[in-house]
Image (cartoon, rainbow, N blue to C red):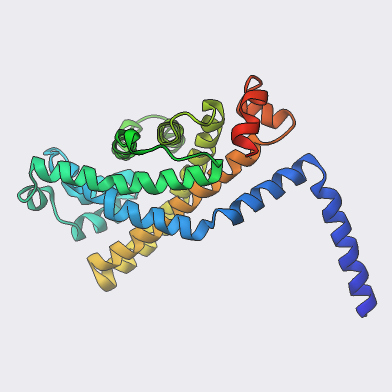
Length: 294
């Protein structure tokens, strides 16, 4: 019995070794190696925490300045693509814009934006680690604010996609397409700005598309998952339950962002047609040694 198991193990190792020598095998190996090296769970939790304490307060302030929007709860629910029932649960447990807006000033908005740059710095560290490039100095600090504004603008646009697709044929499909476009543009621009164009735009665009796809799939999963978690959390713990559920959801999105970035670099390093498609032919000699294989 032991001999049979040992033979099967040796055979499996040989098959795996042969597979790793093929282009798909090398791609999988680069992805796994890059994923392990980036410490994905720690990175994703850091990004989720920074997003919650940095970006969410800015979204609350911005929602407070929108008189036509019935509170931050509705703004948050629409950006997450929640169903009407779950949307009502979130709205009922989150303060309205009148409550928040009474304590918000222009100075508060400026301070919130400056504080939110901690999320940009966390993103910058992650992208620099994955792509193995040097982080820009303080002279590029304006890019931190620009990337935060880009992410917040994207979330605001996603809150409008539901309204934009109402009454059209196949609204779910068009909502998916619009979300893909918005997220692809944002997650192409963000690393390009943070890394000061150290990585080819074409490679970043591919990575941005992968990121957008993962996030859109998560949004579809959230249609089933989020109502259960949010309603249970709100029923048992009130606002605190919503906070825990939202942090967990931010972690899922952050994990998808890290994974997509690792996959993007692994594909850009490919020696064959996939690599040429991702990074572009003219970047083969000039860029690959400096960025993609450093």
